[in-house]
Length: 449
Ligand code: UGA
Image (cartoon, rainbow, N blue to C red; front, top):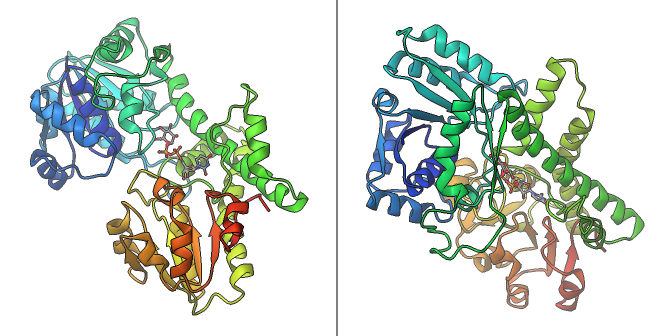
């Protein structure tokens, strides 16, 4: 099938590349002509594990192309994936202007029937508005549009894997023919009938993904409900951590034990600095707003949001208690990305920590395996290092802010000989307190003694 993808952010890039890998002819377009030129030249504009491999393979098979001319992409495809951004507005609502622009563009350019698939994260009922805009702006009454909501559940850092090995594919449709078309688009993935560049053809055996057919509004709700529930779990673990600190319990032991109950599950119960990124904070806010707009008070989500906002303050308190005076201290910050395996620093809790330290007059020496160039543009007052040991040299304290594997396996024996003082304040609970103390470190983390 001829497909187009509008919007080349991480979701659009991964969607385009993976659908090409699954055997479709895909053309991707973006309003940012520079980004398209970069992609045409074979450069990958973001760090996303395995994306380079899928892009290279799709390029080789000539299944994937890029154009800055959205009209060309729209006219040449039967199905169009909308993957544009829906950033938060000042009041917390999702800004849907990019979706609206794309709808008007599709309506104006379409000369034949189109399946319009919304993949961007949008509040419930956007699909209805999308259909209205497509019809209202269409220049040709003969052209039929079918709208589908197909939310993505891709995590940054494992987005390619998540796309090619989903646990579920949700399609919200208005008619059976749209469901059948989406099933056809995803068939190679559902049937595992593609060459997997992540596992090099030897994918682990797992339960095949289910394709769930729902209404458009349910599909839209599923996405927000899913992210909000995960955010809720994290905040729950964080409040537990605070409680553990007061009662002398160990949050890791508690969350591990409760997570073994399959009704709860062990994932997303890691206590620490809390969640950041471009999805959870904004989706949580948008969901609360959507609920309020129809008279439903989603109080528990507001609490999850508040708990998360307080994490940086709690961390800062730990730093203050340990260092006494922060002003003039040399502080090494390990990790700037909002989580491991990405260069994304949007709404990163680590950046909030850095800003708080700078405000208090600390000398911040930071490191991150992937996010340095993005952070440098945003926070020029920080001294940056590629090598974590260089960042740690002469530091009065090491602050762990992102859960990178490289930091889990740091040689603290060596780091201790470089630092001015053996002090680690761990915002991601990466190390065993007993082991750190054995190595002669003063060590503080969340919810553990
Ligand atoms: C999230 C969802 O997990 C995806 O399913 C969804 O598709 C995506 O949002 C989206 O809406 O596009 P992502 O933002 O990439 O994916 O990141 P997560 O892996 O979910 O982590 C979010 C944040 O929670 C990170 O800052 C992470 O450090 C934090 N976190 C995660 C915790 O603090 N504790 C945990 O136990 C797990």
